[in-house]
Amino acid sequence: MAKHHIAIIPGDGIGPEIMESVLTILGSVGFSAEYTYLEAGLSAIEKGESAMPKSTIEAVREIGIALKSPTTTPVGGGHTSANVALRKALDLFANVRPAKSLPGIRGPFADKEIDLIIIRENTEDLYAGIEFQPHPDIAQAVKVITRPGSRRLFRYSFEMVRRQGRKRLTVVHKANIMKLTDGMFLEEFRNIAKEYPDIISDDIIIDNCCMQLVTKPEQFDVLVTENLYGDIVSDLCAGLVGGLGLAPGANIGEKCAVFEAVHGSAPDIAGKGIANPTALLLSALMMLRHLGEHSIADRLMQAVLKVCEEGLHLTGDLGGKSSTIEYQQELILKAS
Ligand code: NAI
Ligand code: MG
Image (cartoon, rainbow, N blue to C red):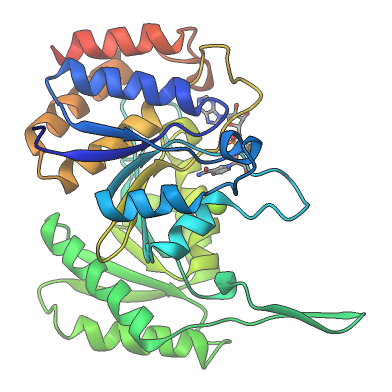
């Protein structure tokens, strides 16, 4: 029996192409697992199911680990996002997104060494889905922040900082204006910080944080923030280090973890064999570390660094001319 069991969601658009590429790369360095393929997105909708079928959610819950490609969310008309459904059902409360400069990749900050992680709360805030219209001309949304939700997020964040040997955790908020909600969030951060005297903890107001991120991004280590701020700021961070084709992510809950790239299903390039599989590969490396497979993750990371630094086999989104397969073959060569 394989040592690991992983749920695979191939998704839509470029999803199946990059998933096949990533699983081929993992196999090339001797990683083996039992893979259970699950449906989500358009293929599920075409069969008359929801974008995130109950059977898929239950299978991920039972298996505990999933590698997921992006799914297309049809615009309008009662289609809820497959991702939101999965995060909610499995209570995946922390969304972890690293942003790290890669050698040879021209982001807006080619001269700076950026190595930060942003942790976004994934279940509360204005994304709790509580909206109503008390009058035809008025629409309202409720912002929900809870002490237990904040505490588990901060505990997870401090533990991650410690586990990864990082130094500092910064909470991003707007407590000067939203005194009750963000005020509670900040208060709980300070309470939990007392349990981690070995880690530098501080706070920054969201608007100043954005300005600092685009002027001195190298100053940050790990940032933790609420759902809405985190959604926006984590995309900004992806942009700092070369864009969506390189940005990985993990959705972490008490019992389950779902690893996926930040980018979407890229329908504009689907089926052309030119998608960049790196973001999903880096997500898979986060998964390998979660599974304790550090040496395989290190080896593949070295290969990613070499291919980027050399710059001869990059995909179109990074200014190169290589196809998905050419990039994959070069990566496998560098990892062997
Ligand atoms: P997108 O991320 O799919 O595409 C934005 C641009 O980046 C496009 O030009 C695309 O070609 C390019 N791009 C993205 N990933 C790439 C890769 N790996 N290699 C090369 N180029 C890449 O965002 P968009 O167009 O807003 O969304 C498309 C669909 O994806 C929508 O239905 C959206 O709802 C869904 N989506 C799904 C997500 C998920 O399942 N986690 C996350 C974000 C969007
Ligand atoms: Mg987003």
